[in-house]
Amino acid sequence: MVALTPFTAVTAEDPYPYYTRLAVEQPLHFDGEQNAWVAASTGAVEKVLHDAAFHVRPLDDSVPSAMRGSALGELFSRMARMIDGNAHGPRRREAEQLLASGNVAAVASALPDLDEAALERIMFAFPSRAIAALLGITSSKIEGIELHARALARAIAPGASAETIAPAASAVEALSAILAERFPDLEQRYAAIGLFFQTYDGTAGLIGNALYHLAIVQPVIAARIVRDAPTLAGFVAEVARLDPPVHNTRRFAATEIAIGDDVVVRENESVLVVLAAANYDPAAGGRAFTFGAGEHACIAARLATTIASVAVKALVSAGVDLAAIERDGFYPALNVRVPRLRYERGR
Image 1 (cartoon, rainbow, N blue to C red):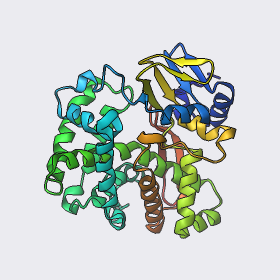
Image 2: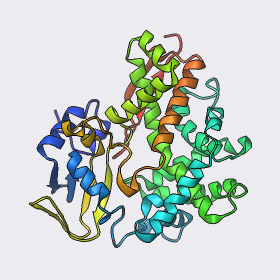
Image 3: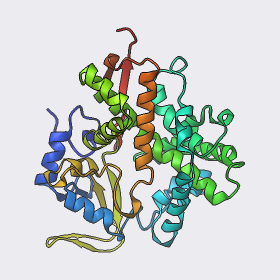
Image 4: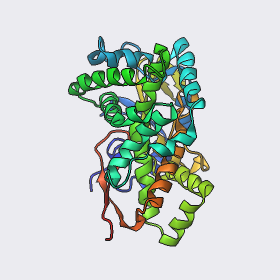
């Protein structure tokens, strides 16, 4: 049996015993193979995520070189998720205001008809369409919007290849054109585009993981969970904690930082923050780190739970038989856990 690593664990069938051991036995350690620190315990993860001296990008590479000079690079340089310092606060508030002013009731209207799309395609399509509906984009412009979101997510994901840059740059331009009438202000438009990237894989993974876990409980219990909205929201939140869609993120030391009595992270050294391990640390006490913490905590965490809950409820109401859903591994990724689902009606 091959030993797991923080990267291979993301798509392992059951990585959670490994994460528990990592949090307890190696709470903060240097991984020579990855040339990076690994923070796994709740204490180490909280220290890194809450300390403003840990940045989201390397000091000398605020925008990846392959993106510079493109529409994607311009977006990257403006996204609250990707910047630190004085510019971060205003960018984050811009995105938060967009979400706060949105019409959450419109989210359900964006769900594709199950007769027109396979269950797994809905898993990927709905988050982007839901964001568009929330932001007040007309239904005629929503069709296919998930393809642009997918191009963005693929280019910005850890380990992305250079071949993803051109399609993503085209996606930025396409989304900008779609959003221009609704958001004539350029900063608002970039903030809105960033939301499509941030919710694409993570929310798809949350929907898929929630469907899978409902499928493996007794049908009568699953029906009770889905029937009651608060119960379903609580169930999805627990899935986000115990089988999270996001397993790790990265931070970089902007200066020399001491952690505890015997660890010093040198300037520009990187830290792999294993969020899923912190969830499974016995010291976590039920807290969830799936969507981060501190000033870079995901602004759409609550919305992701809402979107996933709406998707599950609508799919079951449309006649999806939860017992007919099976999981067949996961999509390749270094930080997000998105299941491959198989669904056979009448099985």
